[in-house]
Length: 139
Image 1 (spheres, helix red, strand yellow):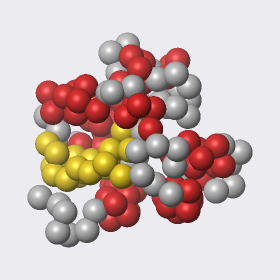
Image 2 (cartoon, rainbow, N blue to C red):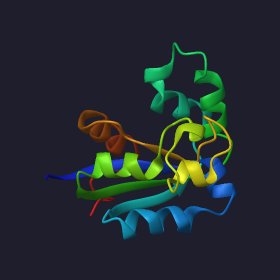
Image 3 (cartoon, helix red, strand yellow):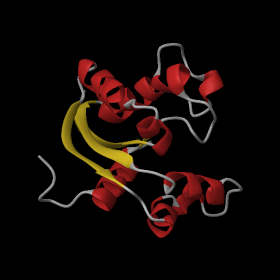
Image 4 (cartoon, rainbow, N blue to C red):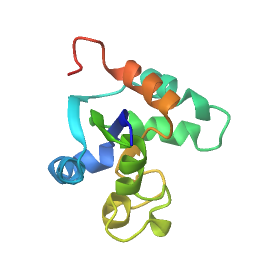
């Protein structure tokens, strides 16, 4: 297995529910190391840029409104098969289909307000990490 890096975001609903510590705990107890972390408030323009891949989809406006509605915690995670591990811990995007014990199954309230975001592939992870972290912020 290869050591990888991936991006995870604790979305505004996760921050508002006080789940930052719980989410980070789940990452760490499953072998993912935090290599960078910060809390930020995305502007609508920044959220639109980050989710540009979804621009033509019907949920784009509501997603970018939601992601700019409150603070988020952005994490650079590292570990063996970090992308796959993070996605397993998050659970399915549709929380109703997520495996019991995953972050989304335990805490999400809708498909959009589903607590966390995670990169889906190595190229996406590289792009997403570079969007939020410069070389001085990564360890």
